[in-house]
Image (tube, rainbow, N blue to C red; front, side, top):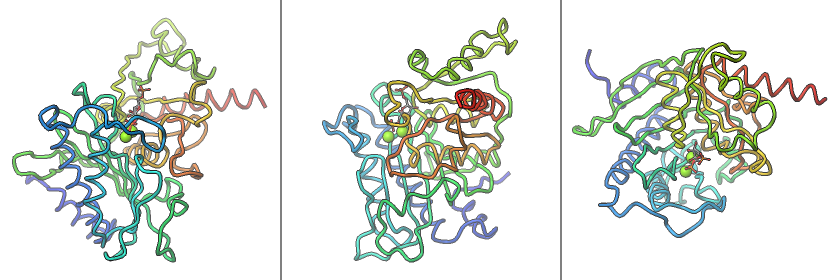
Length: 338
Ligand SMILES: O=P(O)(O)OC[C@H]1O[C@](O)(COP(=O)(O)O)[C@@H](O)[C@@H]1O
Ligand SMILES: [Mg+2]
Ligand SMILES: [Mg+2]
């Protein structure tokens, strides 16, 4: 079969009426920026990109050099406008509007420029996650409040994994599709169309070192998986934790599985660890479009009404049967408490 490039795929999606020209252009620009981030990541120590930047981001987290470089690459690629009204990033306190000298578009772009920062220096896969919203029609100067739309309103979401291969996984709400970067010709080529995540799985991903801080229903659910063949589930489960959400989610998008970053006593006051607008919503959209499920443990992630640009939420996502069972345990525990 003739290879389908990202550009050809975007033309198909335009013809099918799934996206307009402006959104197609936006995705091309983001994909091009991610190729540059992939090149910078790949140079490693030779490119001087490893290690700390010596600064903190808006969330008080120490920034790595590659967090800052990736953020700048995405901002610069999108600065000239035409397809965008403003960008918001995990690494910046406030949204960045398109400068007045450039034409404004109708979209809002949100991104986690470099996901899995703790893995940069040890040469483990990292990635970029992004989400696209529509800028309200009457808004000429988008502010944080205009980004506070639930995940159900996303027009597009995607992630790029910088691993053994560089991969782009994308949805416009009509299935989830994967593109592999052909490094020789510099193009993303469609490698899987209409990905399906199996409903059942025998593999889970969670940071087990937080176990003693989890809520009771999470202790119960994971305890049952760990009991394996001898426990109530009557079968053994395998565990994986890369600690780069993009890599953990990509494994699930490839062979099924379930991912948890639940609430725990250490992060309760923050609402969770992962960011709703830059991580949870785009990943939830991608996973749901592949037939999986995504909740906070209590409600569907994409139905959460955002209250802040940098808001955090618990994340349960992947094979639907396991997400539903873990979510049911939380709801039952809440109901029992009244
Ligand atoms: O270090 P922990 O607690 O295992 O957390 C790992 C999680 O944190 C993250 O690295 C957070 O993302 P950033 O690197 O963008 O801050 C996720 O990718 C990952 O799932
Ligand atoms: Mg992240
Ligand atoms: Mg990040």
